[in-house]
Image: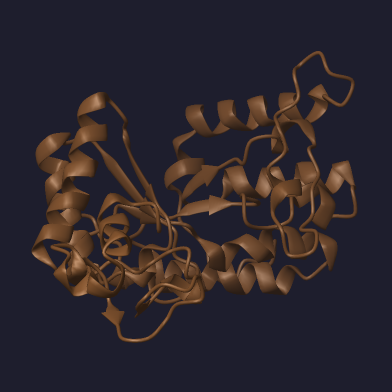
Length: 271
């Protein structure tokens, strides 16, 4: 962001911003930013609070790789990488090499909302997995709208295009309305959504609070209501029903390999 030491150095030089040793870390140009800076610059998705880094510059790459190494050496198990599709697959290839050299078992999961997962995910290069947005909507809309044809189509499409991938499935996250709210606060449907999540091919990812029926919807374009504090187990809002269902589904997935590794039978009349 704008508070990063490199960008702060550029800002501190005012009209002499070209004298900064970090000027090539970003995409700067003549003009004036929305903050009134003595220069203009490219920003991520137009949000000028987030100046766009030039990841093709060797010093920028080394800086990012140093950050990756540091936290892996501290002991984290991997990286969940925001907006991974906004950066070239070639960059992630180098990022993975650095992570593998530092912590061989580290996992890299990219947030990829649009595009072809094959471009960013593979077994030996780039990312290990990605957020499976193409299956996110069918998990709840098949229950909300009784549209099981959509679910079947997306499962078959997923198998056809990404059958050799282990993508990360989810029914909610910090950017979308919570599944309970999407399903009109119907707790039975929320539990069925959890069943789908835990029995689909891929890696299930449970958003905190979904195991105790937390609700939340975007308000005025903000995400605060989606990211409320986790209630304590003794809180009156804590419902152990979903918690127990989640425990049973976790046990099922752990002890029955077919749930984790089973294939998809196309044309099954059961869907």
